Image (cartoon, rainbow over all chains, first blue to last red):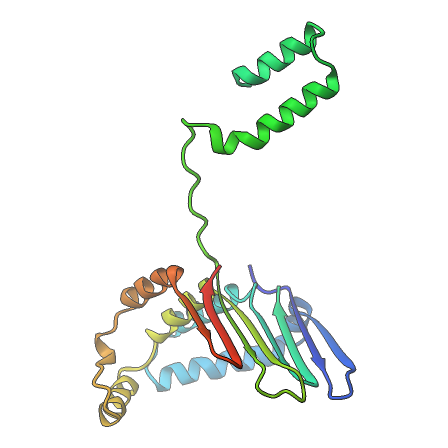
Length: 86
Length: 142
């Protein structure tokens, strides 16, 4: 399943938390024109470096599909960063 | 329904025990069942799904300990290593040359995706535990 929600929490040195809840699907829909350009650029790069475009697309898709469940928590004294992909 | 459950229900029907006692007996049976049933097939081993890296560094005493907790799905590692098969051959040749120069004579062109797959499969049993006076680090699969 593709990621649904990315949660980013950042604790600033003052102790205040900045929370960002990023719903992936709506963001992808909004950025779809840009993503189209990125895909085109990727295909050109594949041609240049003689990499199979189908393989690259498939690999990127698998990478995206495997992302849910990823979590990174870094707490360093006054600052902290928490990222979770669901 | 097994024999013990049937006996409890019969005792209840005959009025030898109350409904509360029957319920308690059935609960007790269900708690014991997983350990006692000799003919039951062994439960399949739960395969780990995540690689977890946990580090606590308490050397900087003024700010409190630094903590790092990273959870990576093993599926993500698999997908990542599959992507390595897309590295162009000329890049692999250059990588090999650089590795050789650095004293690491590994031929990356000989590395097949299935070898890396096997490596990931064996990660299941990895358990690294480093315990130093100020730093603790654990790498394990869960």
